[in-house]
Image 1 (cartoon, rainbow, N blue to C red):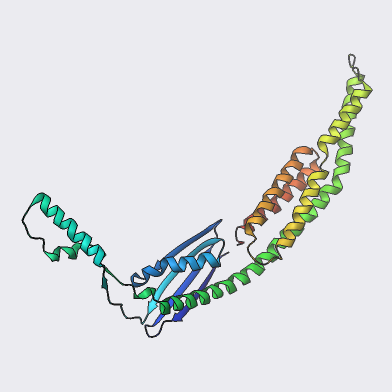
Image 2 (cartoon, rainbow, N blue to C red):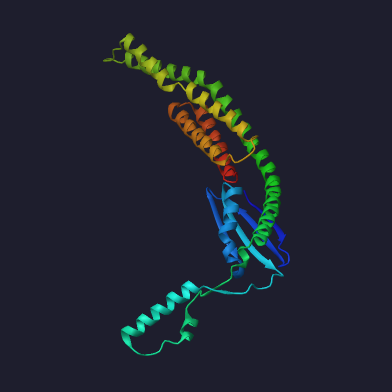
Length: 287
């Protein structure tokens, strides 16, 4: 479900942090963080906050700092010592006796780090800013969710109506198929070389009834409709379960279509599958 939220948290006396959240539709959970250079060390922390808060969607996070003076860089002594020793080893290999000036360390990247942004006050400010942005995002998604629920209930209601029509037509469709079979057999019996075994005819009619019986598919479809209706009222993430149910509904509709040659049922199945497909499209927006 799409949405946008923003929030900020004070990190006295260093200023304040700003967090922006953008949620886009996605089948799984994907987190993307863009942070100002001085806040890069907080990227992993804010990603963890997002994974604890969200379960689905592509979440884009932007971190900014306002009125926060640059922290003093700190030399990574261990990294600098290791780099100097390696430079000395290289000197010994290619130019023994030559001096190794300390100025060479200036070209070694990341010798100075800024660690103050990981302090507790800054992390607390980040937590407050993220919580405010997430609440803002949730409010926007709640409004969208209410409209989405109304649309899905409309399509679900239409699917339920079509299912009742198919169920009501099923006995007539079966009787029609039996009648057509008997008529074909009668035409065969009336031909010069045609002979019909009455017992075999009744057996074929029984097999036709069994192959054309859609009662189980209708019962399962009705159960799926009821479950989906209940899920739309649940709090919390239900998107993946909704998608699974809709996949099963489409499978049952396809089975009904393959079992019945009745034109009215075929039209009903086509319309039912169209409603299920609309529901599947809407389900992509559910967390």
